[in-house]
Image 1 (cartoon, helix red, strand yellow):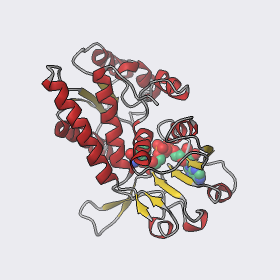
Image 2: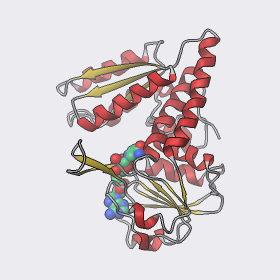
Image 3: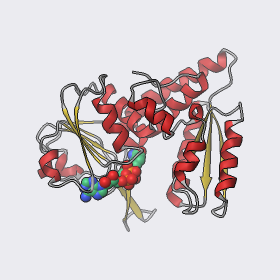
Amino acid sequence: MILLDGKKTSAKLLEEIKTSVNEMVANGQRAPHLAAILVGTDGASETYVASKVKHCQELGFSSSLFRYGPEITEAELLAAVEAVNNNPEIDGLIVQSPLPKHISFDKVVEAIHPSKDVDGFHPVNVGKMSKGLPAFISATPLGILRMLEQYGVETSGKHCVVIGRSQIVGLPMSILMQRNAYPGNCTVTLCHSRTQDLASYTLQADIIIAAIGIPQFLKADMVKPGAVIIDVGITRVPDASKKSGFSIKGDVDFEAVSEKASFITPVPGGVGLMTICGLLENTLHAAKGTYYQK
Ligand code: NAD
């Protein structure tokens, strides 16, 4: 079994991004600038945004964090997005989810100019990605493609089962894995909460990408020997032995499944770190006026 090491792989890719940023600055251009909008005080969202800002600083990016209280109206938030759209000093914008219930996340995402949509959530970018055109690709699927690429995992002609059909992970992942490209050229099955007899699909899979949000959902008896396992899940479970009071669990029963897998991502230390890479890669593209292209 080979561990798909997100720490090592992301460090390598982030170093490459840093080199590009240094070259831009040496050529008299300004550094890429990522802006984040954070509404409310959700603990996990605070952690995610803080980590993104920290990585920006380490890579020489500029970053801005716009914080708003949970009482902000939808109209006010849309105006805040528009202000970023019109700010020529900012290349990329992310709006951290979840938003308060009175604000439509879809509406806010659609207000972001597609050329600054470095999360790759805007319908224009999703549409272009689906057609195989240059686009910003959702950061987690992009990070997974980079991980497969870095380890030279064979994908052509393989059966890839994606579990979960979210707009940000499962659905784009299923589209990317079937494209005529590397990584890609898979026969893809997209499973979800209404799939009957899920194991009958996962047992046929050469590659399983689990994006469900149920800790240790994928068991060893659902996996074919030699399968490649990508675990996207991140769930906080209570853990009295930890100072924080919780530990992070993936969607895969790592201990048992790793005995059967050919390649597997750990949680933590796998896809999460690659997601940061995907976001910063997109922001570098935004600053250069380019897109991910296969
Ligand atoms: P989501 O939470 O929006 O939806 C979960 C998906 O799982 C749904 O499509 C649903 O159909 C499917 N599902 C639920 N129960 C199922 C079952 N019993 N059988 C089969 N499918 C089932 O999805 P998401 O936003 O992609 O998040 C999934 C997990 O990935 C969460 O733990 C989330 O925290 C994590 N996540 C991690 C990263 C990262 O960077 N590693 C990024 C995004 C999300």
